[in-house]
Length: 95
View 1 (cartoon, rainbow, N blue to C red):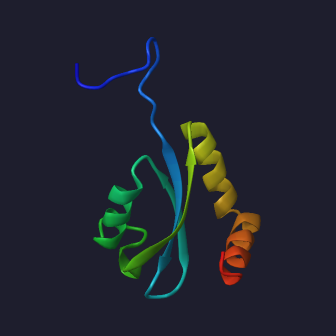
View 2: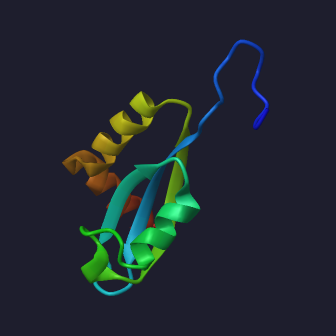
């Protein structure tokens, strides 16, 4: 047996929304993953096509969710106009 599971249930996977800020141009990037540390390394190593020209990054913010449906819905919100405005206000006020 490789990993313990709750009786009768699947392994629980946690999903995360993350917000990165480019130290090059100060712009933000929003994404989701099941492993924030791995994904952050991928972004800063240039393995992500959409961000490789903007490295290095710092991690500003994370949120965690129990289902992929929840995390995808939240990612769409943060990438919307209202979500971007809220992020901008949030970080300008110093969290």
